[in-house]
Image (cartoon, rainbow, N blue to C red):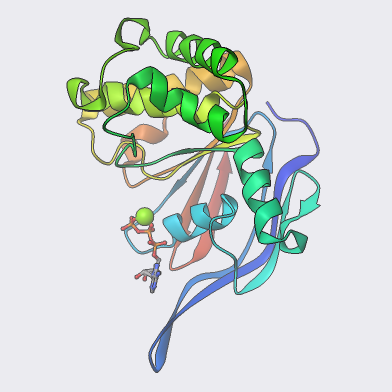
Length: 232
Ligand SMILES: Nc1ncnc2c1ncn2[C@@H]1O[C@H](COP(=O)(O)OP(=O)(O)OP(=O)(O)O)[C@@H](O)[C@H]1O
Ligand SMILES: [Mg+2]
């Protein structure tokens, strides 16, 4: 379920990559609203623009044209420092290769975004431990990433994304490096966090088998939204 004010409003987003004399239009005139509480999948073939769109939603990349309004803020108006702070407060990220720091324990990895925000050590430790309990990894707080399975690593990454209480979690192909059982588990975990904690998620996948529990699915093809289905 979603309330009426969108967290994110994209209007007429275009993203062109220049390649010497030529160019690629990765996104063509995308309009998209994401509402609080949604669990939304963006799917489509390789090269359709999913990662480009995620990078723009995540305020990692800027569009060539169009506007990105996040939580009432026109993000184009923010200077670099303000944008970085805005991103660290409002967004959580989950990546296909997990992006955990190999020399840090699960707990320390989850503490990192809090420490970047200046949260005191003891408080960060407490919140990170609670986030790891939420994803079912209480027995692994002291484990280094290479002692964890792929599915467990991705659960650490989800805990790290959620620990800052973000407005929106963005996951670009979070299951690309997982087998089908772990892929299912990761999507189910995100779904559970969405339901229980009202966290808004947008994730991408090539795999149509992972779309059966989503609220809404957007199909991209050649940089265009070709369908936007809201499930009953
Ligand atoms: N930094 C870049 N420079 C040049 N072209 C790029 C760049 N990033 C993406 N592209 C091009 O933009 C198009 C969309 O790429 P994008 O990575 O968004 O697709 P995708 O749907 O995420 O694909 P995949 O499923 O393989 O991850 C592709 O044609 C790609 O080659
Ligand atoms: Mg991609």
